[in-house]
Length: 152
Image 1 (cartoon, rainbow, N blue to C red):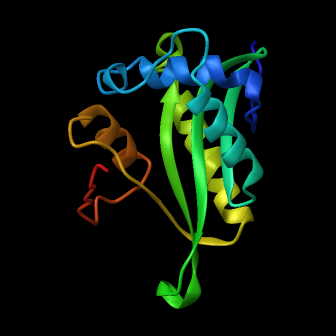
Image 2: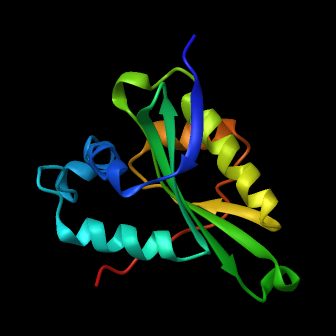
């Protein structure tokens, strides 16, 4: 039986992470998974890795990166100064989907948020990702807010 592990991403994981981000109808148009890796990805990785309020994580199976997500820990005054965990860019490798691994990845991330003292875990997902909506609903997330974005 293969072993699933979770850890902080390393720069050497970037090709696998970027490939998962690009292997998606939305990501296909906004990511660039070709070699060499764009310097913008390396710069972003360095900034995230240096920030104690960020975790770029990978899920591995027998050493292969098969999942990723990013957690940002946000401090705010609302909810009596509660810390919240913002989960972004959740992906599982296409050949490992539908095996319960996304649920394990999110459970790990939620535990990380608890360890940091978060009172809320939040995430956003594109309106077009209906399968993702059902997935998050099954995990107990509530579609309680409307999100807005302004591209700059």
